Image 1 (cartoon, one colour):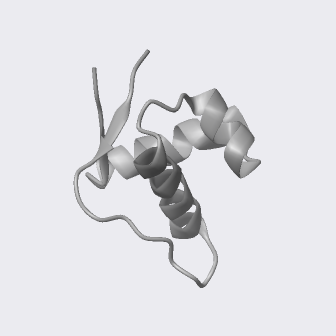
Image 2 (cartoon, rainbow, N blue to C red):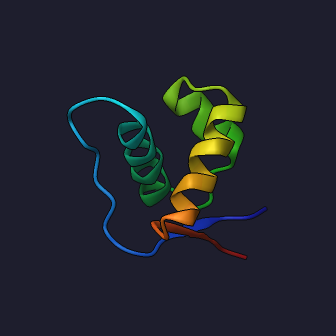
Image 3 (cartoon, rainbow, N blue to C red):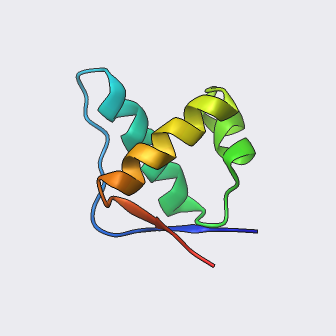
Length: 68
C-alpha cells in the first residue's frame, strides 16, 4: 500500500473551488498518511476519480509526495 506525506503546510481555503478540495484531501492525508484513494473518497464524498485528480494536482504543486 502506498502512503502520502505533506511537503509543506497545506490548508483548506474557505472560498470554495478546486483548491478547497485539494486542501481537504491534504487534511485527511495529514491525519492518516496511509489512506488509500478509496478511503479518501469515502471520507470526502468525492468519487475515486476526483480524488485521483486532486492528488495528482497536489503532487504537481508539491504539496504532497507519494511515500513507499
